[in-house]
Length: 118
Image 1 (cartoon, rainbow, N blue to C red):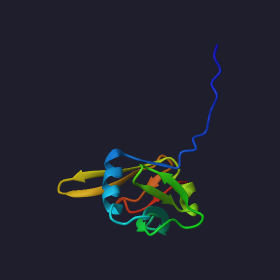
Image 2 (cartoon, one colour):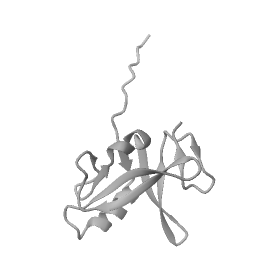
Image 3 (cartoon, rainbow, N blue to C red):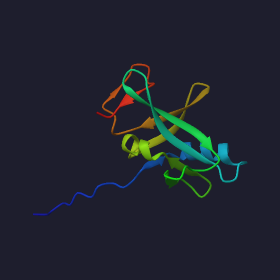
C-alpha cells in the first residue's frame, strides 16, 4: 500500500510557447515593459480578463517570469480568479486570438466575454 500526498499547486499562470512568442514580440522594443493580467466585473456571468501592456508592474502584482524576455504581472485582486490558468495564442483563420484555459471556471457566457468561478 502506498500513501499519496496532495501538494497544492503554487503556479500562478502559465503561457504556451505560442503565447510567449506573441507577447515577447509586443514588449521587444519597450525595455522594462510587462504584460499585465487583471480581471474586471463584466458580462452576464461575472468577470472578464483584462490583458494590457504596462510600463511596469503595480506594487502588489504577482510576477511570473514567462521567459528571459517576458514578465507577466498578475493583479493581486485577480489571483483568485486566474490561478493555474494557461494562456495560449492561437490562429483562427487569419486572426490571432488569446485563449484562457482556466480550470477554475464553472460558467461562461455564450459569447465568451465573461466567466464565473463559482
